[in-house]
Image 1: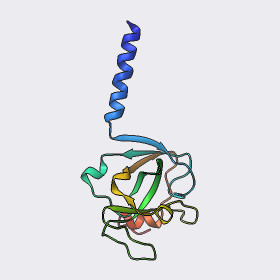
Image 2: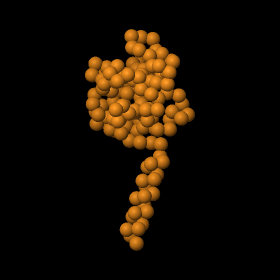
Image 3: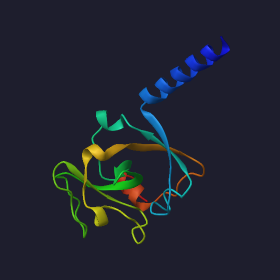
Image 4: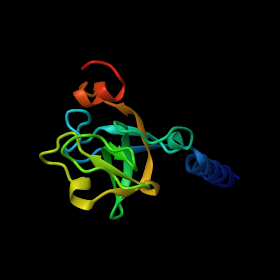
Length: 143
């Protein structure tokens, strides 16, 4: 009897986790420093971009070569950003790490199809990230 109840609870918990749009991930590497640090736990909202468009400045989780990575969106589709970096072709996003001198990002693997964006990073556990100029420009405030 106890085993049946325990098994039912485990199955129920698994279904809730599967359906829930929120996921946890661990940041690995220093490519998003100082915004995010290696070992920091981040909360990813997989449903965010169903109601909001992907935008320049978003910090997103995505898959590249079967690997989960966290990067900042530089440009989306036809909405290029002026500057020295390339823009993304339609249907793709160009992503960069905040620590560009050490980041493995779209400069290495190219623009990423939008369907590879798993969700937007909406929170973190641990010390708050440093406020960067990227973040200030993305939310319209001065750095």
